View 1 (tube, rainbow, N blue to C red):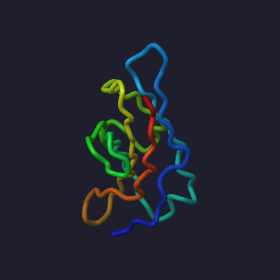
View 2 (cartoon, helix red, strand yellow):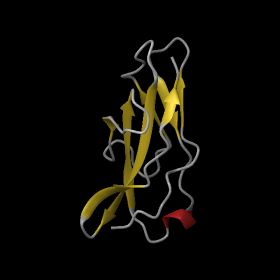
View 3 (cartoon, rainbow, N blue to C red):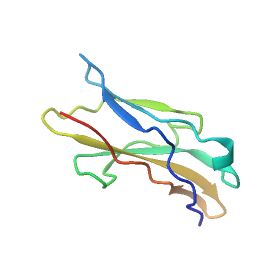
View 4 (tube, rainbow, N blue to C red):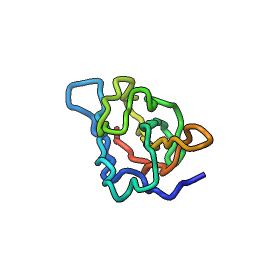
Amino acid sequence: MAYELVAPPGLTATLLPGQNNVLIQWTAYQPADLAGHHVIGYRLFRNTVPNVPGTLVANENVLNPLTTSFSDLGEPIYGQTAYYTLVAVECTDYGARPYGEGGNVPYGA
């Protein structure tokens, strides 16, 4: 089981003005970061508790390896802060498994 990769850099979450929509963005992995890994996509989680992944918002079927943003239409929860965690999913000899847990990025209310 390989978990050497760090999370994609630049993870941000922004509440779009006048919309019931949070835009989550990140920077793509650099080729050197992916050496020896076969990333098949990402899993994005939302929670009101920091540093706990929480509810799965989107998985690798939606967030392919080339994806660098996602609009979460299920938020905001007014008056609360939501935290987003991005996890890359790697295909290994044992099937798909997550690695490189992303920074727990809040957007504030």
